[in-house]
Length: 248
Image (tube, rainbow, N blue to C red):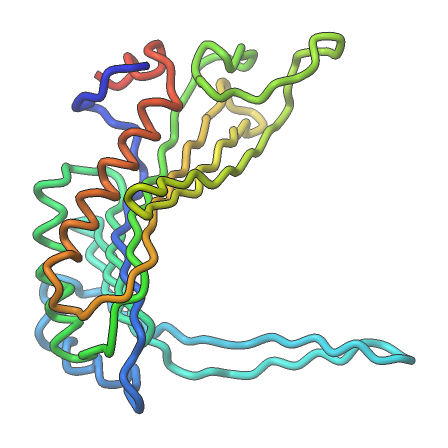
């Protein structure tokens, strides 16, 4: 098993903290307007987040009938190009996206906590129902022809009687940690853009926990620490030392 350690050039292209909530009755997304004056200096790019519901009704005879129901304002995106941050304030929860370049956990966690407190000051939800950490990694490989077993510990397998050259692959598994009530959706894929040399391996880890907690429960932060540990275990166990060495 590869050694868990700090990678100075980690291949993280996006990291997300996410909390889903049960909103209090009657709460509307327009209440987040109060945050615009407070956050606009740091997050000058503010956009509406609107929702819609598409339905398709099949008829015994004739063509199906489709309709779109506008659900209206669901929240706001607060963006900072300088810090590569996007804060999503929604009726159903709060998400902080950190785009490339990723810094480190100790810098990102306090930012999340600060903005989460801003969310709570407006939304005051009845309960927290889900917590998640999602880390998307892009691993560039300079060769067009790759033995994926050299880079991945869970590479796709082709029966040996068949040609071994892959033009594409996509895999998704869900790993359960029963002891800590954690789960993670793990996606592996690769991109090969026409006209460009080399390929990019994608390792997308979405670690989450279903909960039923009050918004001021100290367990919330402990849960994120557990999710981070679980996410790191998956990352390092999915990659070979050859791959990890590319980012030290």
